[in-house]
Amino acid sequence: MKRIAIFLLLLFSLDSVFALTAYEMVKKSENLVRGNTNQGILEMTITTPYFTRTLKMHIWNKGLKKTFVRIFSPAKEAGIGSLKMGDEMWNYLPAIEKIIKIPPSMMMSAWMGSDFSNDDVVKESSIVEDYNHRILTEERLSGYDAYKIECIPKENAPVVWGKIYFWLRKSDHLPLKQEYYDEKGKLIKVLESIEVGSMGGRVIPILSEMRTIGKENSKTTLRVREMSFDVSIADSVFTLRHLQTLRAKE
Image (cartoon, rainbow, N blue to C red; front, side):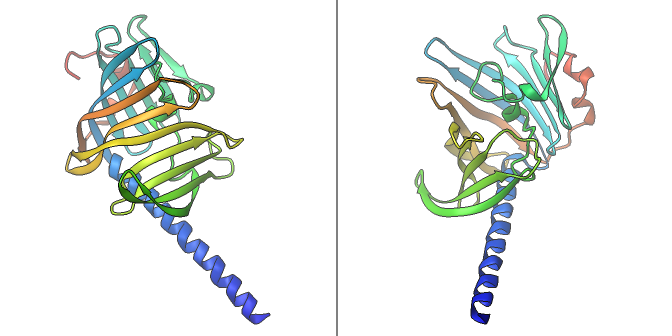
């Protein structure tokens, strides 16, 4: 009986160690691609059976609570912006000169008709703090040794996914792939790192692809053109005033 008790104690202790390790890996991965702050230029290409269009945008991030995005090309969408402050998000539409607050029920709606949601663009929910993490297995993925980590939402966490599978490269915890499942266990979206490269003094995914399951011949790619990390960003960037103020060179 004593041996059984010791075995169970060791088993639970090992589970705790692995859970902590998984958390640290996910946290390191997020810090790798975000830093304390970042700013850069992204190129989003939306492909459907009916059209292909590319948006070019500036993006600023400060911690997990402040994000600002401004589209500058093509001309038709130029000036459209998105702002996240804390748990709130707004979009600015220059064509009607109006700021629209995005309710929580719309966070999973498509951003600019892409496979990325409002939540994906401004990272309203935190993969680090809103989920419990567990290493499932080690796998070979895209030519790299990787950890497959299961992310299950914490009780009462403000998230919509029932679970997320996260593949991280073993050597540096760079994110290779993510699978998003609904509360019923159905796979909804897949995000993959297609190309990895050096940017802003870090090795990060510089070309990613998001696919929505069931949408045939459709995908959205996101290419990082420029990115700087841990740079000084004024708090005035993350304001409604800035959101509705268009500048020639933002």
